[in-house]
Image 1: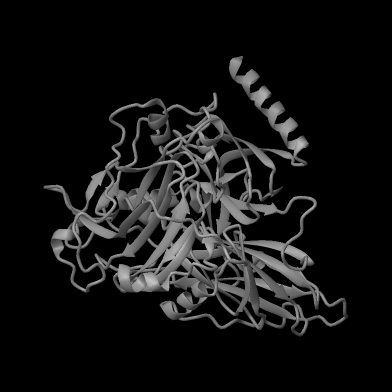
Image 2: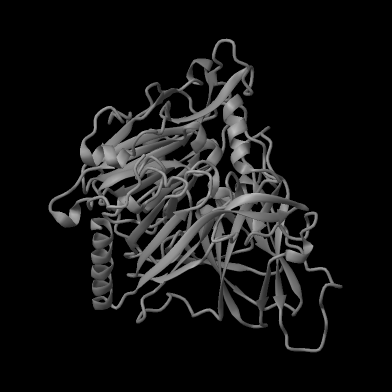
Length: 566
């Protein structure tokens, strides 16, 4: 009874505050359930929200509050993460399993409640348990408040385009098989746009996603990379794209013929329909930076269809024009695209730096247990780490619960600020003694309000690779990116202190580095991890404990009454 009364009081309080602020409270119900879905000629029972793939698009305005009741009718534990939402003081609603909450068990439910403050643009939501996000994901679109406009001309139409990844199998079984043997999981069989592979795949032509447009109009296309394990190049035949936002932060407009979007990232582009009125492919395929590693080399398509209002039937008889896409390993194009993204105005860079961290990000190999047969190279198990710590998620409580209640023995706060052993991180032959990390649940403590700078350094252990690193609960400025080993003297001269881009996920260059900076102004426990799900599964993660500041407005809220127990 107390639980339902508290919930009612919360909803009433939110409604009153929202009305006073001219904002709205949006209520949704997400039913997580098994749904038969047919693709590539075969039907699989996959986990969806409300029977939809992708799941429901959430549309709100800045300042609005979302109240989403997630009911788990599936056979797996589940949590939902609202990717990129700052979650000021509402860390209990962030969603990563065993980090900010225990999972919602089969038959259980949990209501996520949070307000969107100071963010406009395209974000998304997805499952944060095992590999469920292969099919449990959707768009989260934040428009300006009623009396505000976009910082660009209002588009004639807005279209979310979610890039996904499809296995002609049960994705949960794919990762479970890999975890059992220590091998790399099987690669996907298709990429998708709004859930559809497109007409280059078997049995897929009829369902290809279509984007109807009118000649001369300008459309806002909101691209989201929801693929599990692959950065993607995206292009539209004969059309230029003007990037105006990334990760719900506006950018200086810049025009390009190709995008590179890493898993977790979003990119908003304006496209003017200024070509002869016919049909044009939107196409996406892998940017694959790891040499000698298997990847899905297929191409997903959607079709831009001009409606010219004329009698000419340019329909299915004329094939759509196909765009030029970069080579799979075209790092130069990926680098040039990243360099084009800037904040729209000069920004006030937080300084001075209080916490200087240097984190290696990369793969590793565990020795096989005696008597076992393992599927990794030379009878090993694949792993991954940051600063040689392969992150181990707790199983009996969440990190945030342990932090809030001071429960000992769940984690330690001695995550190293620098690699325990310094070495030539991008050398071709890193000594084998450095290939085996230490499994542990180590966190790094941050004082509220401290300015944090992190150098993220890729390593060549097993294979160098572009790693999309995402921090929960925070946006950050990307001050610089480069190749080779970061040199604090020489590379500090490259820092952009004028208009660096603001993001929540940075694609750390293959065999290179990125430098990010943010203010630790959000109390709680916040996961930082590689958004290639195979890598977070292997331990490429860590978490920050951000302490409370002074007073209620700088402190984590109390946990909700319906927070799931482990």
